[in-house]
Length: 309
Image (cartoon, rainbow, N blue to C red; front, side, top):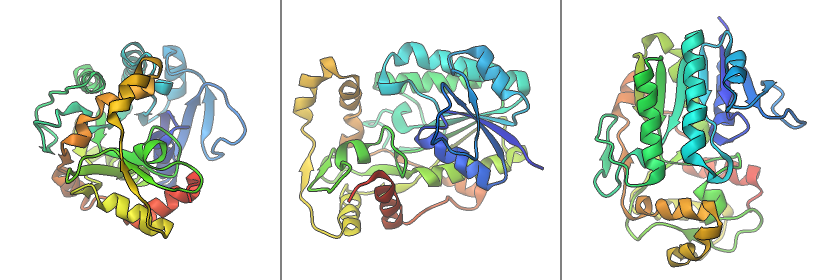
């Protein structure tokens, strides 16, 4: 039987990929967007509205079996005020229509210096403002009592533009002349290919009846044990040896007062100085496997879509 999902943030990275994966699994997908415009995915039923408008979210959610909350304030602006308000609207809509609320989670809930391997129930002691907001989002969902699904993953990358370390920092669109790597020597890092995360969401929602009321899983993705596997693969896919430069962290505070994105990047430095690996045993036990695209293939697909050569 065809089911309907409402995706908030369907024009973004994880929201767009999740919408596409759900449609491939036979779901009917609606997308809430501030303004419908040419070029949007024709397979999605677009509804004009704002995630900050509780009535608009509720109207769009009528008859939905799942609400994917993948919307974030643009440019990291006013997170502390906007993020809880948008989530409250999604929670209210999920409660009203008895839909499962779906949240893409992150590693930012954890203190990277204290949690080298994070299980789904590991203590959450975020050391950053963004991490505290993320932790409170999950707590709000659990306290609400709505049916929920949270899938935490490492740093996203993929064929859609968005806030990505890969496409906004390490390499830029056009012909790549060098790689800018934020991590320290020998420090492991977790990466999550967006189409694989989206496929995982779709498989989990296909088994909604078997999920617990408040379900949490970890997506392991690609674990780069020493920070070199990812950069080597970039060079292999691009077909040439490239210099790998370190991130000039010392310079970011000079720009941060005038740039919200730079302020966020500074907060995330600890996740490049300490490894945080996500334990996915619960996910594998439930699904049988974790969807995985080979690294070279995932990078080639991403580069082709983003104009990186």
